[in-house]
Amino acid sequence: MTDHADTPPTPDLTAVLVLADGSIFWGHGFGAEGAAVGEVCFNTAMTGYQEVLSDPSYAGQIITFTFPHIGNVGTNHSDNESKTPAARGLVVRNSLTDPSNYRSDSHLDAWLKAQNLIGISGIDTRRLTRQIRLNGAPNGVIAHNAAGQFDIPALRAQAQAWPGLEGMDLAIEVGCTQPYEWDQAGWQFADNNRANDGYDSLGTPRVHVVAIDYGVKRNILRCLASAGARVTVVPPTATAAEILAHKPDGVMLSNGPGDPAATGVYAVPVIRELLDRNIPILGICLGHQMLALALGGRTLKMHQGHRGANHPVKDLTTGKVEITCMNHGFTVEASSLPANVKVSHISLFDQTVCGLQIEGKPVISVQHHPEVSPGPQDSHYLFERFLGLIEAHA
Image 1 (spheres, rainbow, N blue to C red):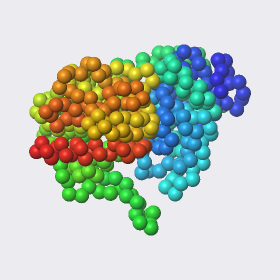
Image 2: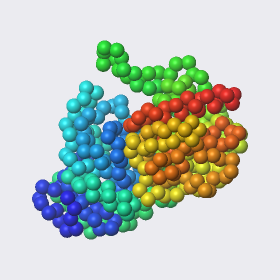
Image 3: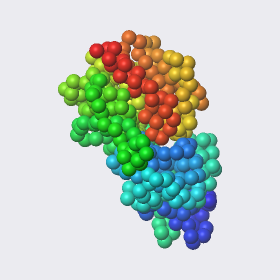
Image 4: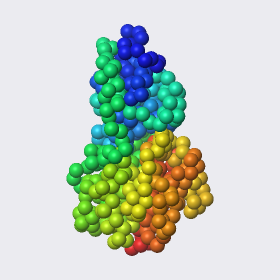
């Protein structure tokens, strides 16, 4: 429910979402207690709430889920996309659904408590989503207190004082600090014995890929391994010399949170050196945006962003339309790209740039998430396309 009063309208309300414009949404708290500030966004995916909440790209954000059945498959240790979730909290319409899935090993509420994530239910998520669509993604504070005691003026001031994601480098907060090797491949369902389900392992590698971790999702690394890549993951601040010391056949620029221009202060010079050396490159999400910056393009903050698992994208190289998973609040400005950089994919929602390729170079990128976690598998081919570019370049 929405109210502009500074006290809960009823004593059973134990959580509140306070926006910087003064809007107050009262509800019922779950997960961790406390308060957290961030950008309030919405995600339209119908599955994969655990993968969404553990995606490092959501650092600094409070996620509104438009789908009502949150919690229905519980949580498990296998589906986390990172070791420590970086999201600030979640907003849902209905109370959490009890889990009913053979893979569940924990209720979502218990998982949220363990991850120190704050939740609020009872919100009119359609109204909040419309507000975001009309006015843009606002700054807000989500707070949960079992006694229902809140200092609304202080929470409002906190939301208003938060600087927002524009100009904020968050990759440095979520990326790894030391290089490591990755050899876990995609999930395999064992025949007639669910106890044997689990992630596969890399077989004989075709190529060696260095992944720059700006906030990489684990399933991106698994997809690279499944395609046949031996993967070495390096920190977001790795220099070109440090990357090249691993003798990569190709480099993957990962997804991640925050403003690409802010992260690009240290990342773009590295990417430019890799481009000058004609190293095969795949950019994904934030990596796609920073590749554009390295090529001389510009990025812009979007009005509301694209977040969900139902976004239609057209591959201009084949003419095919794929349904994709997206999570981004910035976009590449098409008119800023130099003549030798071609747009390879576009969003069919708003015609924004969703992919790039460089004439004469083994370099491609996409704005969407081809690792499909969560989402449809239409874009899985991009990992094979990248490895094919590497092998053709060798």
